[in-house]
Length: 87
Image (cartoon, rainbow, N blue to C red):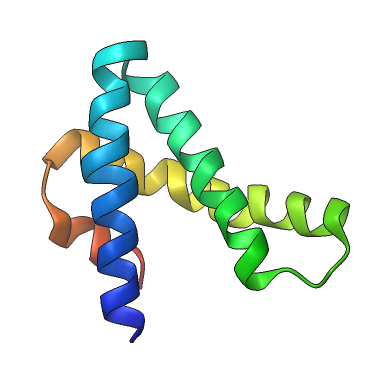
C-alpha cells in the first residue's frame, strides 16, 4: 500500500504539478510551492488535531523532504530516484 500511495503522490505532485508550474513560475518557485502543498496535504493524514503544531511539523518534515524530492525530479526527470529518496 505504501508503494502504491507513494507512486501516485509523486506522479501527481512532481511529474504533473511541479512540471507544469516550472513552465509558468520557474524552477525553484515551482519546487517550493509543490513542496509546501505536499506538506500541507500530509497534515490531514498525519495530524493530531492541533493545527499550528501539525502545520509546523508538516512544513518542517515533509516540506524539506519535498524540496529534496522536487530537486531530484527537476534534475533527473525519473521516478525511481524520487521513490528511492522516499525510503
